[in-house]
Amino acid sequence: MRSSSKKVDPRVHILVPKHEVLPIEEAYKVLRELGIGPEKLPWIRASDPMAKTINAKPGDIIKITRKSPVVGELVVYRYVVSG
Image (cartoon, rainbow, N blue to C red; front, side, top):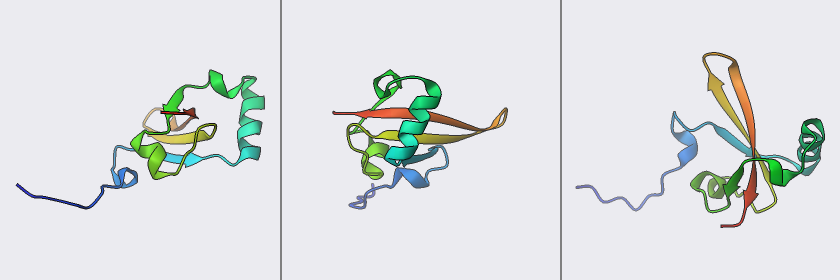
């Protein structure tokens, strides 16, 4: 059995889509276009490994870009909550 003290970066795994914290101006633009408040977005906890990796804080909005064989690229948003 191997013992590893190195932390694994989830961003480099092939199955993990691209995550990025939106700048505040872009977050407001997205919310205006969707016609909702941030709490209406699906939530992601600040303790989620990917949220921690990109230094997302409660109140941030994360843009997740997934590759899809059907639509090419799919963008979803998550609202960061405590936890």
